[in-house]
Length: 273
Image (cartoon, rainbow, N blue to C red):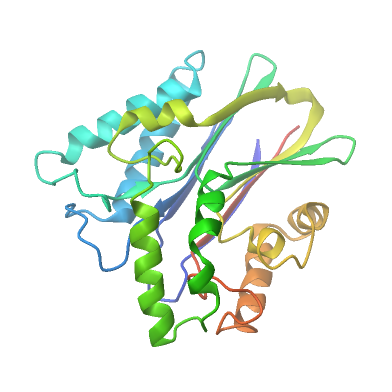
């Protein structure tokens, strides 16, 4: 199992709320989600939530290889809740949450689960690229982003519009017609995208947070085949370096409107034998 991983916080000195790790025949990536300035009810924070949930999930999917990934995720969410429900108030809409991507090679298949707007990139041995992304968050966001995207990123007007946008978005979290993400309620696991492909057909598997996919899905500077070429030649660190270069050239978000100039970015690249 050959795995390369790079994870960078949005800004130097800021806490990274992404988490990624791999074990024998399995890997997970989580992108923690919070609402800046909102009351979360949790004393631990988003980074604690994503890393705790990620560690528990990786342990569960490796310890019980026959147990469906969605059940492992639900169990892990319940365990995290038990760890802090006595000290934290978990009914707040802005309670810490996280996207989830999990993969496991078992019985000749690569099983996968995707919840939230992180992505799974599958590279088959014929050179094809398939991307699995839960698009529900982006679809909801597009309906709400109009006023936000018309403003320079970081301006006072943008900050105010961003707060309104995040409040509206959080109100649609884990609701029908909204989007689903791992938080205090284990039922979110039931809404994850899941499936399996023959593991022998794959050359590599890459787990990516949305901060690392910006070159493709927001900036449209490269396609997925070019991403695979970068990963194969120089690895996840070079992919994230290119994301940072693009962001630095558009700090006000005029070319590419976005909520944050920079975002935490993580890529875990698993080359299969």
